[in-house]
Image (tube, rainbow, N blue to C red; front, side, top):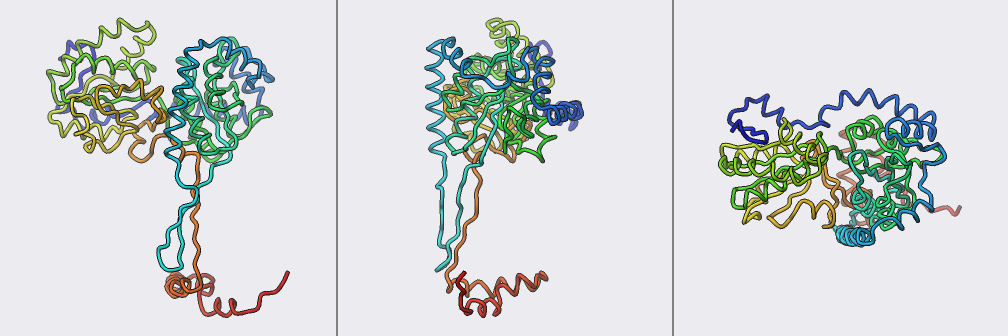
Length: 447
């Protein structure tokens, strides 16, 4: 299969090191970025808006000044006037679905359970105070990312939701991004991207407010800055370069698989996209159709896709057995997993780790990415083994609640005292001993 137009990786021909390398993503090795973001972060911490303007000039080729970091009401108005009305309707359609999905996801504000007579325990959910939604722009404009991050935050009840995004070469924010922010209910949009944008919301500047958390996908520079600043701001779940695995048992047209391989691979050369199957003949057929779809894409996006699908972080993985195919997918723990099969649901329980699982030929990745409802901000870099998609829970904090009646307390106190004595905590033990009972019998004094 060496004549294939995309990379072919046969699992049974790989040694342990080669298989491990096949699981690597761009963000797994941030060593070249971690040190480089430090002076950027320090400059923003010390010089604030001036540093943001300087970095916008340097990295984004954008001629903004320190007093132009915030998008103005006039810029919002100009954006509304310039964006096609049909696109605005699509943004509203997507926003409605995203809002509905996350409203259904909201937990009860207070959930209590009586575990023993007189014992109430449970949880209370509260929104965090502030969050910054990072919206990338380096390889395109992504108004959908505004909706997918800001709307769950709004539904959760976050008091202060802002958007940060790199400015364009004309010094403005992408118009559709501003319209999307307005639809999401966000009026504070700031022109700062990359590591400098993360530093701005971590420390705050004269213009950009300090936030408790930052969410959203970004480049390795953004991911590295989040890691460096994780003790200053909650960096959220990792959301780096795009990833996709397609699994198929060969019961769908090979053209369909080839078409979907071009979806996430067009994001950029740092994306990771694989088709995984145990059917070598079907794999060969899929590979043969990919170039025809490259020819129907713009030059830049086609080149991104070609780079990914012909390299070490993309292509086709052929497993010796279906069990080996499932094992590879679970080891990879992809951001997106598309299951293309006539009876896709039969495979659902075989996949344990993925940011999202799209089942069936009509559950198109593009529909999920833009308008379905669940957020497209998903864990990358294998983080799907332990973390979840962005949701209202990312903007909520849970507080444990407990209350005991006098009778219930008496049934628990002796056990608590016994453990406290064993662990050597005299104060703990005294507080649930006869000393407490004596204190409770003392008359209360008016203040």
